[in-house]
Image (cartoon, rainbow, N blue to C red; front, side, top):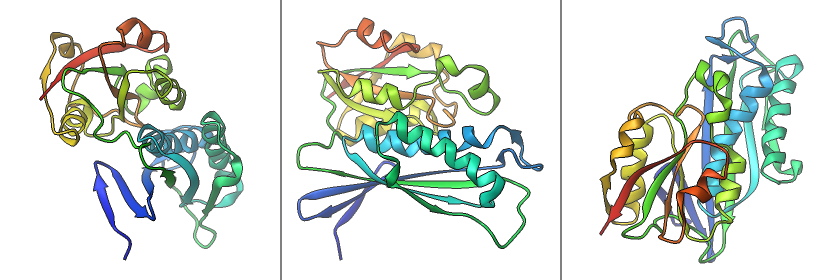
Length: 248
């Protein structure tokens, strides 16, 4: 049996010195079907649902190698629109479209949209960033927690794949953690705990709802060393809020 472990929402599998990193996300009742709770184009559902696990794998320091989509809709016409959104997310991540595989529902008529996406990546020794935060690091929230209709109304306030790609190139950014449905406060505890650290909330954290769902990872946390200033992060073009300082 291959050794594996869970770190936050990720599954890690060790194979001969290489770490496979696996993440997944799903969406239901959001899409172009007649009984969907939130009516949006299939392209948007595909892109956002793929963005979440892609961001999680990339933020960990791993390189995505395969994306599997499990669509609970027919291929034509709904599935093709969702796949177009998945391809858009993959292209935004700078990855080849050949890594996409999946399945659709061709036996039953569906009246609500359902989609699942799994992303698998690999990291060589020393590439993983999980638990790499340091005592004294500042933790910033990039983007705002948005959910449902807010995602459509405030796209300029949302983090995305490009945000992760840019953060990965900035020296002094130690760890990146996309925020999920449990909110900023929960993910902050996870980020600090994975590194064996505690944290002290900053006054500016009060400007954010720390318990609010971030929907399709519309914001993320980044722990940064002293050499990284808020102005550098503000250059990414989305709201930046200092949230906490990590303590040993």
